[in-house]
Amino acid sequence: MKLTIIGCTGSFPGPGSPASCYLVTAFDGTRDWKILLDLGSGALGVLQRYVDIKDLDGIFISHLHPDHCMDLCGMHVAIRWDPNGWGRERMLVHGPAATADRMATAYGLPLEEGMHPDYDFQHWKSRQPVKIGPFSITPYPVLHPIEESYALRVEATEPVADGSPQTSVLTYSGDTDSCPELIEAAQGADMFLCEAAFEEGRDDGITGVHLTGKRAGQAATDAGVERLLLTHIPVWTDINTVVNEAKETYDGGIAVAVSGVTYGVFSGSQLGTPKSLPTAPVSIVRSAPNREWPGTKTRNPRR
Image (cartoon, rainbow, N blue to C red; front, side, top):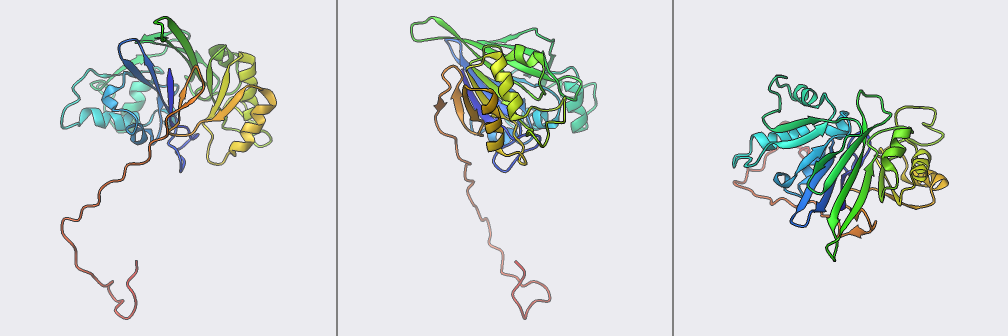
């Protein structure tokens, strides 16, 4: 199983990354299956550097704050208005019960039809796994100030070189504060993709919203995970601070999610290199004449 960080900045897109979105790929012996964990603000553009959206097999939404789901609106446009036609079945979307209505409201659509012609909306049921291709995705309710918020345990069983099956486990915290369900979701995971939006001494008095690096490290220790990948760090939170906090409570491998980096979930190795932003061609159909700014003949035009 491979994990590509599409977006990892907390709460809103930052200068170096969109908000939360993670591309997960696994091989079933015949083909690669591709799913998304969240599709937050700004993620759809970067996502297209790594995958044709028509090749996605499903989107799995942890909760309905905009930094985790709002680019479903953009994908709705890509599906509905592609001049070449979508050419495949509706996109599978698993999420909280209110997902379809929330997206329709965000786009100003009637609730009855909403985005149902484009998305096959399915609702999470706590601790009930959803199976798709080589994946099994199990939602665990966690502690965050919204009606439904889930950590997602993603297991993928793939054939190895001798043809025997191997299962790797990725747990994604979604947004949460410390809670027993987070430990349950992450138990024994090969990789724990865990939010660390808060800092000790600044935010640790706030409960029921986010983890600090220290709390994330403690969750990783309690769950016995192989490695910890910190994510959802807002622009105003210092990366070194949350890493140092996590080191206080967890003695395994620690890294910070970076947009564009791909990891092997079982091995923890970084795979390949991030793709740079494509450069658009500059095309001038017809040159415009030089003009002077009105009333500025005696000085340089404003630029």
